[in-house]
Image 1 (cartoon, helix red, strand yellow):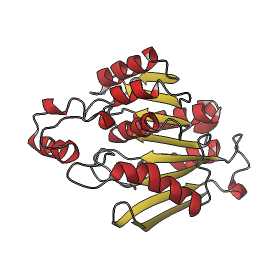
Image 2 (tube, one colour; image 1 turned 60 degrees about the horizontal axis):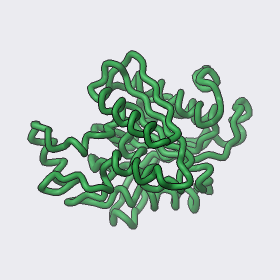
Image 3 (cartoon, helix red, strand yellow; image 1 turned 30 degrees about the horizontal axis):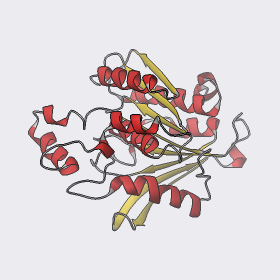
Length: 261
């Protein structure tokens, strides 16, 4: 297993930014049942940065047993959008990160081997990537995803969040079609190729009803979606387990194959 943390110059963002990379390279890979041919773009949440997944979860273990190469980029509190008053973080994630994965690390990024996942704000980002460009991704995974938060942003009363949503969406807080997952799901339903989708949310999570309604919408539209919920709240113990279960699913393994020590 190799883990790198580095600073890169992003052409899209016109600034330096952090990326973490996890590589389950061959010498330490012989115990795995899954082929080493998949790439996962793993997205952090609103209150975290690119270091959160390597610090707080067992992502190295999960990558080892599932064969995923992992890229963890940094997007601040942008909600993985091309911000109305800020930087084009969505373009950075869907265009520049896969290009870097391919050209610098020689990871596979074709539509059969590229996946995206994330927690909370990152869950929204993962679904947005896959539903905007279903032809580019094999699968997308959301853990306690903030899947309808931008759509409902006008109802927030917290002044700091209100201002942040204005930076993302614009002063009128109108969620444009390209940022509305419900509309993106409808558009993607008409495409010939649909990525596998996985969503999980804890039964004590404040985003539970949003995840239930979004999943129901996906199913009615005919998307290939797996949804799970179990006891848990908006915290790392739940996200860690959801990550393990979803990566196992996408790799064709059982959760036990991934969670073993």
